[in-house]
Length: 233
Image (cartoon, rainbow, N blue to C red):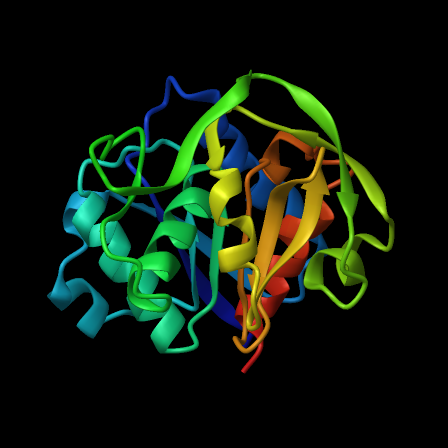
């Protein structure tokens, strides 16, 4: 019998958001290249409760764009649970942002760590508004860590990345966060665009959105790799 896995797409799905449609389609693009079956299921953030995590039947989570979420508190709990339980988690755009805030709060113990979009009064705005919006933009990104998952997957030092965001990591916190096991692996103009947790089975985030660079003829390699990582025993 062919192996079957379930991936939880964490986000408040909106059929009018092209980034949500692209995420779903990028997984479909990968399916013909996989040796197992993938069921990708959108999970509204309002459903993320302690009970949801206690009976988790997924092999991986993907924290989707679309922040702020309807249930930010639940999203942060899911991120913390995934990090502490060595559970595969991929975050893109808003996912990247929230994963860094959670790490600052619960690992680095930065009190009042927050996100400017949803918590503008926070003392430590880990995520702040970008000087130049990346809404619907592309930019050249340099992969600086040759021991990283992203370099191992793409086998290149530079990519063209696709975005749809207005927020990114506050430059004040780059050095504070960039300490093992959390490592920033890709940059644009000295601003972090990807990270991973080196001590974790699979825990990575990108500010850019790989699904926006995926087609049926050429599935995005990062999406394909993520799905294969989730299928590992």
